[in-house]
Length: 362
Image (cartoon, rainbow, N blue to C red; front, side, top):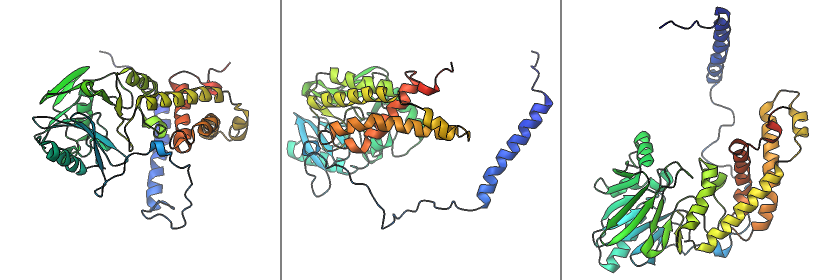
């Protein structure tokens, strides 16, 4: 095989000079010591934190016990536990407990909640199976407290991510599936399904048909707007579709994985309405005149300043009417709607091709 000729020597020298100069920059930075103004662990006592609208009573969950958790029956032998920020679900069976997710903020309270339930119903308290909704540490990071003998189940992508992470707190699942998996233990049944990437590439839907309950994490947020940047989801168009996939299941009760209460179907419909309004408002805001932003920062060649100020302004214009409409209706409408609008702006640009002033030059 004949080797292809490389670039001209002059180009190589130019590249080497440029690379050498660039490499010198970190050395200069390191030589100056710590960055000025580096964040400290202790906040300033005069820190001026913003005020937000009160959380509507309808968004709040049940009171926590003295240990910091609440455990309640969903239906039959299906239960849920929350610390007000995260949720897990478990089935108490004749052979042991099937747990879905192990959020670290609940931690050992998971075992306390299970013990509380099984003392009352006389069934075994041992967790025999753990289902991972997905691989993220905030939902799976207490897996290790269950020991090595528990059967861990997740999507094949979940196993790949956890093997890569090498996190001792999140052992990789030993039982995996691609599309669907039925878990039957001690007379109870869960239907696991993968509908493609959404919040994460491995996020699954956990359906308990006998109890008319669906658990899907980081997709629907009963009583609240979605978390920052649309749940920091990795595939925004797929996350938007996942909301509708969830609503197509015949559930009566939703375990959303976050916050303090369970969901009902009206919660899903309300989130769909919120997102529809945010999409309409974002599309309209993307017609914002870009001229002032190019005029201010273009002459200096500061492209990132053009992008930042223009896209931030579009997001602010998109968020404003949605915040006004949903404050007092959905909790934290004034907290995360601006971030969620910004995420939609980027998705519309990159995924939907709505490039606006950054489109094809005429």
